[in-house]
Structure formats: C-alpha cells, structure tokens
Length: 459
Image (tube, rainbow, N blue to C red; front, side, top):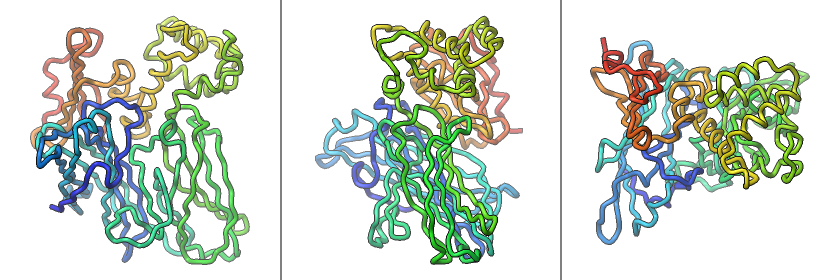
C-alpha cells in the first residue's frame, strides 16, 4: 500500500461548486484511455472526494485526518483481478476553520491494461471512521488503439493545462504539460473555462500534408453551441492536442465536447467525445431581454427551440400535475409551449419579488447534479430512481453505501431526517451494472417493501 503525504492545499483541492458541505465523501470519477506499448492501453483513472467530510483530530499543533483509496479492475470474462492500486492519503490543516466549507481533493492512478471488458471499482473511506466511505463500480471497455490509421485517445477534461518541465514527482505531468483533471466534469459558475487534452496517433498514415481539427460543444439536443477549427501539419507520427473552450455563456445542463480530425482529401474523420455539465445559476437573469417585463418574450423561453422546450418540460415532470402533463402533450407549436412552460414555473415561483425564480433554479441544479452522479447505461441521471429521489427531495442527510459485501449485491440507504419525521430510501443494484433501483422507502408516497433485503441477497 503506497503512502501519499499531502496537505489539503498541496495537490488539487478546490471549492465544491455548490458551496454546501455534502453529507458523504462525494466521490467523483472519470477515466481516459491512451496508447500504451506491446498492445496494452494506458488507462488513467481520475477521482476526487470531499476532504472536509473526514474525521480530523488535533495532532502536534494541527488537525489531521486520513483517507484510504483503492482502484482495481476485474476481468468480466472470469472476474479475476487484472490490476489494483491502494494508498493512504493523510491530510493536515492548521485549524478547523478550513473545514467549514467543502473542499475537493483530486488525484489520478494509471494502469496498463490489455484490451478487454473490465469492471472498475473505486473505493475511498476515512481511516479514522471507516463507515464514512464512498464507492464506484462501472463497466469499462478497454479497446485496442488501432495501428495503421489515424486515431484519437479519449478526451481528458481538465480545470487547467499549463506548459511544465518534466517532473517525476508531479503526477499531473504529461507530455510537456501539467494537466489537472476534472473528475466531476462540472463547469460554469466556478469553473468558466473547459480545458481538454487528448492524443492523436498514426498521423503519418495520411498522404496529405495537413489536416483539420475541430472542437465542438453540443447541447443536450445535439445543437452546436461552440465550434473551433484549426488546420495542422502532419509533422509527427503522433501529436498532443490541447486547448480550451469558454463555457461561461452556456446555460445549466448537460453538454458534449467532441474533438475531431478531418481530412477531406483522405475521406477521413475520427472523433473523440466526452459529456460534461454546466451549472450557471445566474445566467437566466443575464439572458432576459427585459428583466422588468412580465411576459414570455422577456424570458429565456423566447430563444428556446421546440426540442429544448420539450426536454425542459420532460425534466419538469416530477413536479407536474396529471392535468399539466396532459395539457402540454396536446400543445402544438413552439409559441404555446413557451407560454405553458413560462406559466408552469411562474406558478411555482415562491418569491416573485426577485428577478430569479429560485424554485426553478434549485430544481434544475438538482437535475444537472443527478445527470452527473446517477447516470445508468444510456439513461440520463435524472431518469433513474436515485436521480428522481434526489431531484424531488434534495441532498440526503446521510447515505449508507454497501458496495462490496460478500453476501449481497450493492445497495444504498438514503436518510432524510427532515422529511415526515425522518424517512429512508433503499436502492439496490440487482443487475450488477450500476443501475440502482428503488426497493423500499418509508416515505408515505413511495414504494414500500419491508422485506427489501431479500432482493439484494446473493444467490
């Protein structure tokens, strides 16, 4: 087990975007696959968690806490362990005032893997309070980087990329750059610039001397909202592609970044994409045509397409009545839908004295967070059971995770202490594909099954 001794401000500790301290370690992750050697694929795993959720105790004039992190890959073919790393991460702060606001620690681990389908596990827990833990279990398809034709690595999304001298002690150093990853893939209010890193291979396979690169950001309905193009020469067999995109003008929601190499002479186009999320709570006010006007034409709905309107109403369905759902279904044309959405959220605006609809703002903040945290397969996070519960009821008071128990499939228990005198929600991953479904709840309006444990017991 490796030991990494770090202070919370030494490596990559940043303020969490919401500014509110979460109830758990709030583990976030991402990964990127690059060309290795001898047919292997170099796979980088990026992760972050909330260091202020650890237990700190006075020690030598400071306050110290410690986390234990581990990452491992199991082959899906026979469930054998292909690679594993584990390490301890000590933290030290001079006073407890630094622990009052959430701070996210970011790091990475690298693995050389043979092309195969794996299940990746990430587990982080508090060494001094082992019940404080968080974990991730996902399928990872490690595919061979093709030889003989131009190809791209995965996109690594970052919070910063700067030129750097080679430094073996800097785990973020990569090909003359220091690349600080963004495992949360969250941008906007607190991170207005998206930085990207990827690698291009087999460029000499093309006959034409130049090629075109294109960096594009598309919104949730596939509409391009940002596009940059640049011509490059085929000077080397491989190349590092780095750049940035300003995203401070994008509304909160889910987006996709795509980087492409295009050579029309060779009839070539290869692309690499990654989803990310924007949280810009102040933007709806900035986009008002006339903030003082109380009409649909003075709101952000005036510029939204019919697809965007339909998507927003679909995401709003958890707080819509049956009559509202039925009425919207019967609407034809963009004007009627704009009016319906405007009236829908106006009715739910609890403080009409302010220009911002705080109720709507909080609702779509939860939708964006659910998409980021609870995506399952091809389903957006807000459509999953955990996403629905989070959107409706907000951050749980406590989350109890059971991810690696011998006699049961993974399950989670969410506690809400301020709802109906205290309620719980139990979610289980019955399929083993990280799709947690609601098994039981003590909330009076939710599914109840007091014998839920039998649903997650191993056969």
